Structure formats: C-alpha cells, structure tokens
Image (cartoon, rainbow, N blue to C red; front, side, top):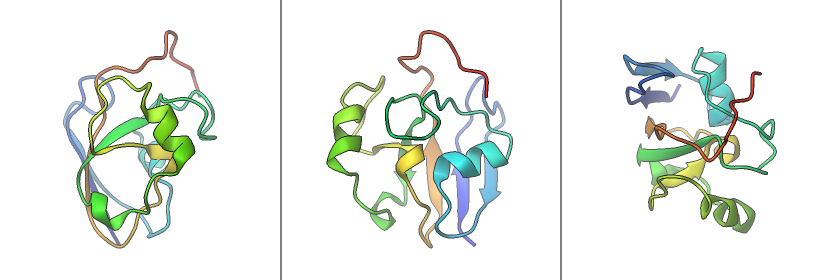
Amino acid sequence: MPIIIIAPHSTLCPEGARIECPEGTVLCKALLDHGIAIEHACDMSCACTTCHVVIKQGLGSLAPATEEEDDLLDKAWGLSAQSRLSCQVRVAGVDLNVEIPRYTINHAREEH
C-alpha cells in the first residue's frame, strides 16, 4: 500500500504524519480518515480551494489535473507548480510526500 508522508502543519498535524491507504483512495478522504482535519468546504466537489496541498514527491505518479482543477488552483493561497486539490487526487501505487499550506482563502473554517 502506498505511504503518504505529511509534513508538519502547525494546527492540523504539528508532528507531521505517515499514513497508508489503498491505491485509488482520494487523498482528501485519506487525510480525513486518519484524523488530519484538512478543510474541504465544498464537500470534495472541486468547487473551492480549501483542500489545496503541495505534492513534494510523487506528483508524476498522479493523473494530471483537469482544466476545472487548474482553474480553481489559480485562486489558491501559496500556489506552486506541485499544487493539487486533495479532493481531486487519487493515490497511485507510489508513495507521496505532501505539504498542507498554512493558509487557505476560506474566511471561516467549516466544521465537518
């Protein structure tokens, strides 16, 4: 099973994390299932950027972003060439190193 290594994030996982998930799992769901409360204001429907992540390693193993995802990412805080919306990423058979940006454009955190 692929391993996802999450870099430390001051509020969501201060120590960082290392999780396993089956291939094909949506990255946002994997994070949530392992207690990492990443924001997902649109309920993972590719309608916001609150689940923005930066894939530090393993980006090439993922399906390319759709045009819809790319358009939304243009609005994300801290955008980089390795940015993706975690609700649109299906984990492939390769380990990933992921960083959750410190901020989102969300003005009020949704409680899910």
